[in-house]
Image (tube, rainbow, N blue to C red; front, side, top):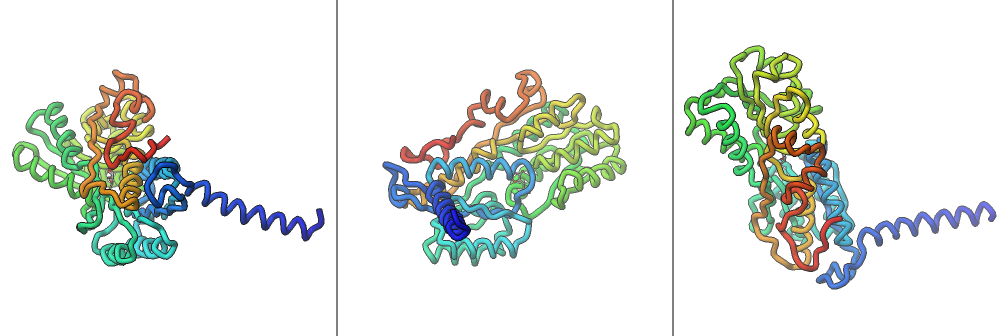
Length: 349
Ligand code: SR1
C-alpha cells in the first residue's frame, strides 16, 4: 500500500473508530421508550469533586449503568472550581446532551446555568447539591439517617458523656445535612462536649486533615470520640491518631466506604471503628437511571434516596470482609438499589 493509500486508510479507520465509539456507547436499546430505542443518547456527568475513592466509584457505577442503557456518558472532571463547573455545564448544553447530572457544587454558582439547560429542554438531576428547583430531582444518601446511625453507635460504644472532636467543612450539602444531625445530637446529649473542630477539603484531603488533627489532638488530649463523616476526613483523623500513638484512646466514626477504607478499618489497632455508607457505585448508577427516566418522559420522583448501612470494624473482622466486593456479597444494599428503576432499564453489569 502506498503512502497516500495508508494515510487514507488511517483517516477512514480513525473516523470509523470515532463513530464506532459513539455508536457503541450510544446503542439502540430494544423495547425501550424513545429516544433510547434509537440510540445516540448523550448524558453529561458534571462533577465538582472527582478525587478520592467515593467519587471514583461513583463515576464507575455511572459509567456501567450508562453502558447498560446504551448511553454515551460524557464525564467532566471536577476540580473544586465553581466557574469551571459552570463552563462545563455550558459545554454539555452545546454538545447536545439530553440530560446533565450535576454531582456536588455550589448552588449559587449553578442556578443560572442549570436554568439555561432546562430552558433548552435539557433534563437535569442533582446529586448532593441542593438546586432547589421543582424540575430537578435531588439524589442523596439520606444524610440524616447516615449521621444518626453513627451517633447512635457512638453512644452505644462510649456512653452518653464524652469529649469529641468534629471534622467539618461548611458548604457541601451532604456535610451540612450531617452537621444538622450533629447539632441536634449535642442539644439532646448535653454531656457530649465538642472540644475541638477542624476540617479542610484541600488536596490531598486526608493528609491535610491529618495535619490539622495532629494539632487538635495535641491541644485536646481529652478527645475520645472523633465524628468525621466523610471517609477522607476519617483517613486523616486515623492517620494522625496512629502517628500520635493515640489509636487505642480514640474512636472515629465516619461515612463512606471503599476497599481501601475497609483495609484501614481492619488494620490492627485502627481507631476507625464505624462508618455509615452506601455503595457509591450504586449511587452513580441511580443518578444515570434518574436522568434516563427524565429523558424518556418518565418521573423518577423529586427526592431520590439511597439508604446507608452502618458497618462497624467488628462486623468487618467477624464476617471476614476485606473488599467492597465482599461487602456486596453479604449486604444486598451494596449490590443494587431499587431507586429510579423501570422495567426497560437494564441492570448495570
Ligand atoms: C465534601 S462532600 C463529601 C461527601 O460527598 C458524598 O456524599 C460522600 O458521602 C462524601 O462523604
